[in-house]
Length: 199
Image (tube, rainbow, N blue to C red; front, side):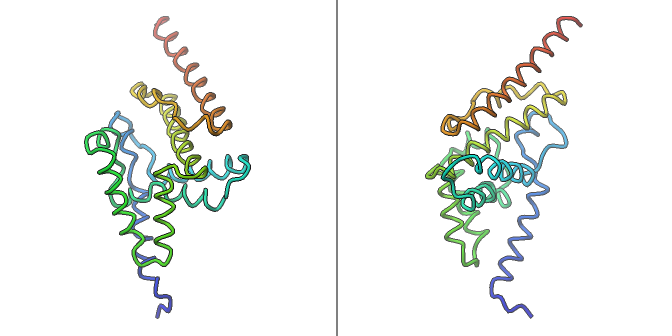
């Protein structure tokens, strides 16, 4: 028999988190992509970047940084990945409130629920350097994925490149990696234009 009073809450949460492995990032689907990354794959990439890049950023709390990276999209276990079009139609406030209710439900029954919710709130508000780095890495990872899909042949992802991310200038290493992605994409565009002109 379970002696830990939180086993049931953890078991329920684990079951819900499993869905993140199956839920696709819908922005890619809307643009005709097939076999797109899951929310869990995106979160893993962001958390990995957080560790690697965070270790190059003096003064950051690695544990806090990784916790925020792992928490940043957990609400999607209940509400799915809302694409930019849905966010635009619902409004940022309604989306944030729905996500917060999802986080409250996910962590109900856990002794650290307030701590997890506070970290998620910190991320949403960009209230710490750790939170802002995760936001910047969330955007960086999206650009890297867009480039991967464009290298595989997609030509419907231009809008993902229209905003470089407001937070990259705070983190020079993120700025350098973002610039590198744009440079690689420019090479891809030049190659595509050349093929079209010579074809």
